[in-house]
Image (cartoon, rainbow, N blue to C red):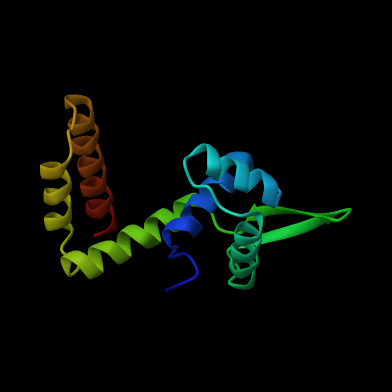
Length: 130
């Protein structure tokens, strides 16, 4: 698993840090609890320590408290995880992946319009690069 590939709990922690900007272990624990993840303080502290060793988060000390922040951007993590999903689950076949998403989700007409616009934009970019 690369630095920007996150397990479920790690991703939940990163969402807290992306939303807050910075947070103590207690802040992260409280936010996770409000989302239905009741975890011990030590569990969250241990996970943050592991994530820091992997370069996913960083901290600064304020007195005895550690204030954590994400060392990875949300866009970077999203791209990495989606790319990995496409590779592992769909053998890199983006068309198949998008087809599964469209079949498995309720997609509004506005979302379909946005998807069409994104595809057209990508086609223009590819033509300009050629």
